[in-house]
Length: 357
Image 1 (cartoon, rainbow, N blue to C red):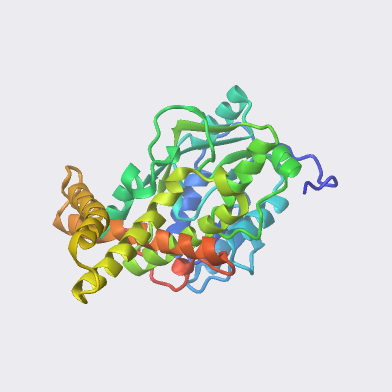
Image 2: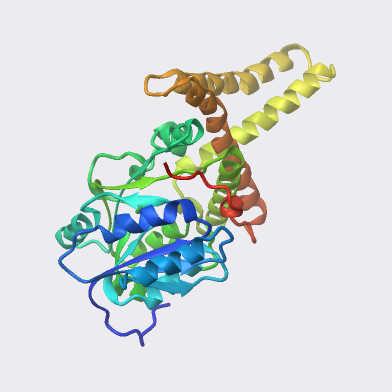
């Protein structure tokens, strides 16, 4: 619920960034924020989780060198909790969400402010352009940027400006956040989608502007990627439990793939054991195996298409694409059936991040 006692914020821009175990990426992310050229005052509020890789010490050193950087604690380590702490500590009328694993393009903030004024929108977002440094990370990034990887959301490569369901990161009017409430701290993933749902239900506009670009660096290992997608899928399942048909149809493709794999395994076991035979076996073979064969051919085609990089990147694509879909789908089914509960994205835990060149 909105807080009626909140003071009217000053004109300006408050960048808010939750941070956990991002030592290898944090300085570059902060530099991309502080390099934004604006005609209004600006600040960067970092919500520091309990990092174990030296991120907190780095953040404190950077804050000591630049008074535009302010620090707040996020002992819970959850993203929406950190975002809310940073927003509450912020001073200015426009909130720009940024991620420690991303870098804003030059002119991003100024362009977003212009789009807010031009459209009257409450929240403006742009394109998430994933990039990578290793063959694995490049394979993940290519699938992030492809409709077959993450389902074709506008911010994964849309080119047409207009009204949107949600916004990547988001440049938001603080007055609207105060009106509808901040991020729902009971939602660990997909919190941005839920906030934008409330913004739209309150009669405000969410806008997509493809001229806004943010570079995103995906997870650096297969295990981290699988953990991330399982957690994200679980929370999307939770959002389906809470909001039902308001969730787009594209979210149901990965769990359908998981169910198809399960059916194919059951059919195969019944056929090998001799329990299933004859005409019924032939029919079920067509139903279970042909869609899986089509999916396998799709994965191979994506790996072989031009732009797939070197041989190592193409081989990683063969593993990464089904990992993304099956991990997300398994998480989704668990989230729908029993709720996300205390599911967290464990892919940020530990200290093994790919170092910058």
